[in-house]
Image (cartoon, rainbow, N blue to C red; front, side, top):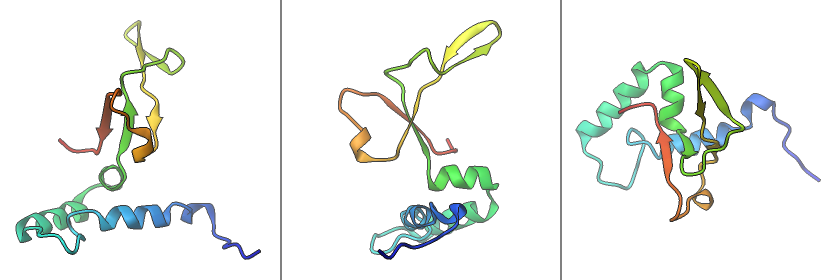
Length: 105
């Protein structure tokens, strides 16, 4: 049995590399305009790490099935929080409503 031993900090490294290769700054084989590519590169260089990580690997929330288990209290009101979904086509359904938070407008 040959298993690659890697520290926990490197477990998601392949996922982030694949996500980076899908960004406009690094896409190949598609007709991406030069202006869009340069803008994406400048964004990547100037974004804080928190925003950059959301741009590379956004959060996906299912908002049609809110549960009371994960709620927060804001100004004496209970606000349900949608559960975080894995970024996978298997999680998407026609009947569901989803929100993707990629950190930008």
